[in-house]
Image (cartoon, rainbow over all chains, first blue to last red; front, side, top):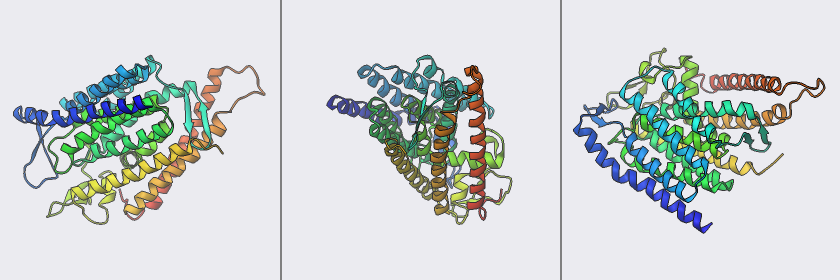
Length: 329
Length: 76
């Protein structure tokens, strides 16, 4: 146990400090090459460097590779390869805007390492009722899970600090759940994601100094998804990201098709003091942010805080679910 | 509004717990033992069918709950 604690501290430190140190260098590099985008929720013409996914890639991969040296198991190898593939899908989308179906389809292929390495257990575990063996169905679930988590996490990358803050809270909740279930190796792998997103949050929080881009957001989601599968905590992982799932659910039930987020009408507009308010356009999609500002306009920072509170609430529900895994009716 | 979103998250959590119970108690032990000699692939197909029905019921219930919770705020 003592060895595992030391490993957890080492890889968490690598994940956190590599991003903490490298991101300012990346910001300067992107600014120099004019790789910036307008922050549409700021009054002045503020340009923000993008994509910060490169920094997140370095942090997650460096820490997970270090973890693999300590625990050379196929599950950690699957996490490393799937994370890199998730980043690759995102960076293509950063460079060239692809259609709505591009990410779900390509992310489905990102699940290949999990299947090829056999880094999964086809038992699906539920709280209170035990587990169910679904060998054939589970293969479909593996292929389905990475696009779902990748796109779901990416869909909440709408305001300063939301996606990185949200991933930090969800990952810490998932890591605690994995420790509760005594799955220490994958729990430590999840800590890498949690500390990587926490370090990036420092630069992404309001007012953002860098945007993760699709490469960062999709990689957060793909890494989260693969950890859920190899850790056998799919249900708990889904509960921890319920606010993001609600966002996707509301969006899909109002738009009724899969589209690239850049193609849709903006569900929000600005007040004179540049707070965000819900749009009057009935054809604009319903999103979590639109619901939060339905009654009164809120500032970008206030909205981010509300979303992070929702993430904390669902994170607590996820940890409660982990404790319920040991209880059988 | 925030309270409504919290209650929606809580409702989804309860639905997940109930859905998990249904999967474990219905789909898991489901077999057509009385027919005998049934191909496992056909049995898996039937299980997939039941799972899809359950997912449809789950999404339908969630949509109703969403409309009920957010009826005054969701106009789109």
